[in-house]
Image 1: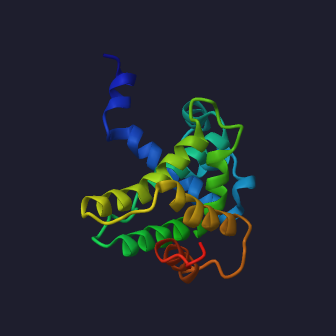
Image 2 (image 1 turned 90 degrees about the vertical axis):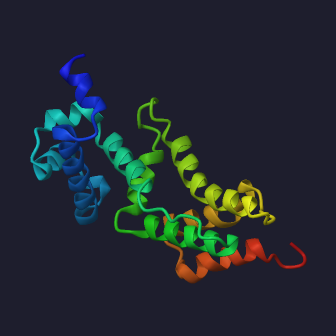
Length: 192
């Protein structure tokens, strides 16, 4: 086994510290100057690593930002708590907060950008990750014997409007709006 393959398999060590430093630097720079002004050399300088290390691992700024986005979205998502509507509201509010954070839209755009290399399939991965948060709440409710909407309906009625409104900076896209989407899904009007 080579040193390189050992480093790739072990979760800690220098590789993990470099990864954490580069991700932190990328987040800080996106928040400070915007994603369009972030460069690999600037991230490397902020992280205290050689730019060649960043280029070797990610190749481009877009690929780096997409990686940061995908890893960040895996952290901190709420777990189901025992009530479908409350669980869906919690996930919707968390999704809104995650996307609305400084740099959130920039990271989303980087993750689904067409110039990210083909291995990543960023768009599909992003959809699967977002879907899994809501699917966990649906699965937990189904196990409790609750009637649940289909995941596609949740994506259409809750997720799509949240992303649309945040990406296009539609006013009044707040927690109340997110909760209202869930309420409309769970208690639709009679003519829906």
